[in-house]
Image 1 (cartoon, helix red, strand yellow):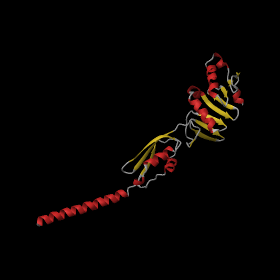
Image 2 (cartoon, one colour):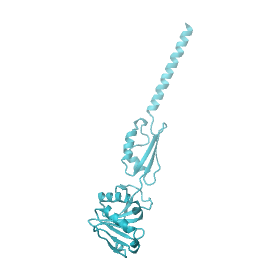
Image 3 (cartoon, one colour):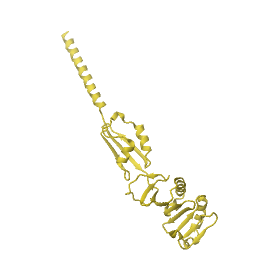
Image 4 (tube, helix red, strand yellow):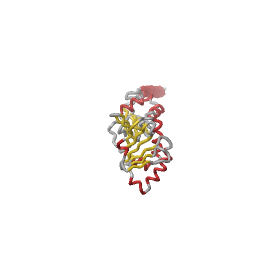
Length: 230
């Protein structure tokens, strides 16, 4: 009988201690926080810009972390091409960013604005350095987006362009790295480019520096680059 009493007391004490230990552990886990937010692999975006966009901060409850919301918030940041993230058991949230590459630089007065291939502004630092196309002139997002899509389908032409202009109700003026100049109409650009490609591979191409193709089925040539004066 006495042995049974001692055994029961030991078992009760063990259960009591285990319950209290589990309770304390549970209370500690409930107070678990995100201790650090690490943004890695960024070159032109600021960490502050990303943190404001996702609204996650150090000291936030570990259990309030919403992976779906984070994914949606990151997808809304236009400067991000893709990403991945991981929240460790220790409370460290690591977000790896793959930034978009600017398609062009829009020269607006004294400011330089990076644009993507959809003509959307990119909030990049001015430290970005790359041999990308310069765009000047009137900013018409829809027309610029269509023009960019044409350039992406003509990679060889795109790689030769140093700078281009959009002149409202006139057309597109392109200056190449070889200092030759091409005028294109506002509409039916693909058709005109088809004709220009034939000229580009002809024998007399090197004799001229100015190609005005704004009027369909007509071309004006000049050995001087008149674009530099217009």
